[in-house]
Image 1 (tube, one colour):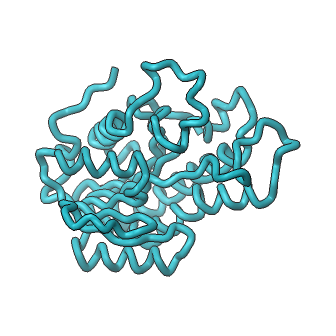
Image 2 (cartoon, rainbow, N blue to C red; image 1 turned 180 degrees about the horizontal axis):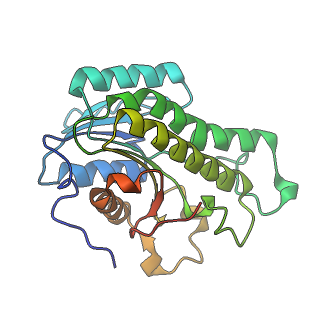
Length: 254
């Protein structure tokens, strides 16, 4: 069982400024809740497709359309103007299924051009463009992190069941993007860390249709998964950059 420390930001220099992309999703919202309750009292900025109308939020919030680079640029500018440099950026977006047009494929006979392109746009292209405009905002003089939700099924080495072509491919491509980003990022931000995070099976809309065979102790609440991943990130060092980590700290092979 994973252990969660008193603060998931104890390894970061203070004050901490953190951006969460995809804040309206189950895991993204959980990231915000966990960080809001953290003893380090970070300054938070939340981005989602629709700006939250909740005026009682304890964090800044703004709109970001993952498939619109202009929107991403505007979001990055908003973050820079509001908080300056960032200690961490968490991209918590993801697409596995959508209406009747995008579903995990059980066979190659189900491969569809629209579904492949749609999943890749959301799971790979969108986070890549977020990196393009948010990486320059990371702190240079202390530990900083850029992390995206990946998935164990994106591991080529670990693929023993087949199926789920679009989702597997999109996460495998995301892992390659993150690895490549980590190499370039180290040149300008030697203390920065760029990683993928596998949240486990979380009780959200993304996994709900596929929870039938999941054991109860392996189905996490969003808050439990977010706390675990944030604790993993808190323990990471620069030597860990470019890797993909599971919720329990295990390194997932590419």
